[in-house]
Length: 136
Image 1: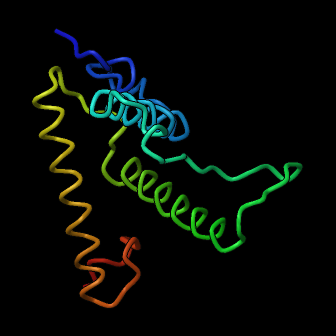
Image 2: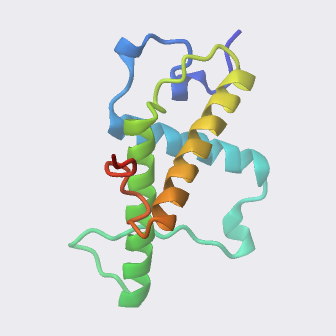
């Protein structure tokens, strides 16, 4: 039995065929986009929300510079977290055969990530720096 989005997560594939990090980020975005389409059948833009992306260098940007800096900072944080989940927790390969086990496994990995962030904050270290989390 396969899940509806098995093409995004490559469920049931061997770790040898795991996707590269860039492709994983794109697939996570597609999965989240599909989830939002199911949760919010009415387009979010009709409710006043407009997705913001950085412009290329040859494009005019009429938005305030502070706003652009804010969205770039948030985007950098999101991409860092996705990269760390892919690197430390091997999120691009789930090895699950059904949605229940995949959801449970992803929840455990996200919980472990959040515990690591909490421990770093308690130790007054950068929140996403896990290399020196456990010191002897």
